Length: 300
Image 1: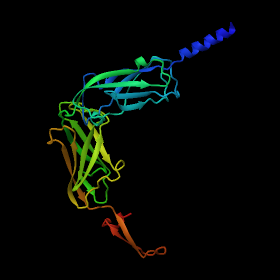
Image 2: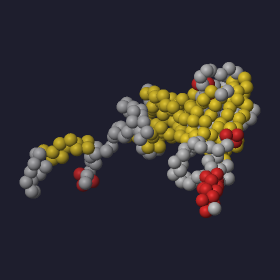
Image 3: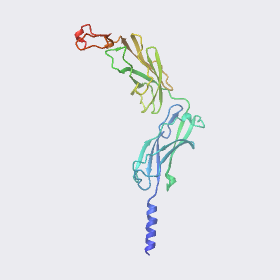
Image 4: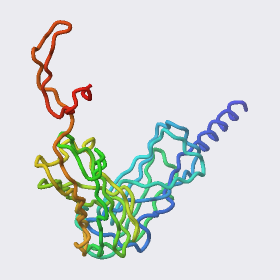
């Protein structure tokens, strides 16, 4: 009798300790949405722990898999550093997917998008998958991305003036969605930076969507881009401009914004030589250089 009790207890323990994680909803793209070639969509889904609690650092990994018409389109791994309680829901986003780059290529029309979980020893596969039907279009929706501000924020100008010995460190600009459709997160805007006669192309990946009429700020800095354009070498007025190019943009009149600055000769004192190069205490030394104050006492 004792042996039977021990065996029954062992069986009951193993039945209760079951892995069972499923996908209960595909939130983005939603049922009936239209997705476009060249405009990435960031999948958002809800998964649920139908089984026993999974403690932090659980050895079994949870993978979320995205398919389009049964073809793999992306896989996202859950970080198991945090616990996943029994019965708990997690609503999260995966990496953006450009439906226009999938193989085989999609044609315009309805597509079935599914997200399903895979986990070792999952005890019930019936709750693993959720699907939606979306419409895929190779023609992007009409859009209008405007640049409404562009300023040099490092170094800070004095009025509109910079000195010739300063280096351009950062340009900050503002984009506005001047169109009639929201701009989703994950999309890319090609920015063209002009500094005087210099031109440089930059890619801005939108970390968040821009609703109709809303704005977003961004910057191009030397800390991020070592080869960032510098101020011109010719003294006088020059423009700093940002131009935006976005897929489907049907209005080029507001794509560019410029701010005019002025480059002045440097006023920073500079020592070029000493004569003599060495001297004894109380002997006279002549210091030669540029941009000294004409009043000798003011040069410290």
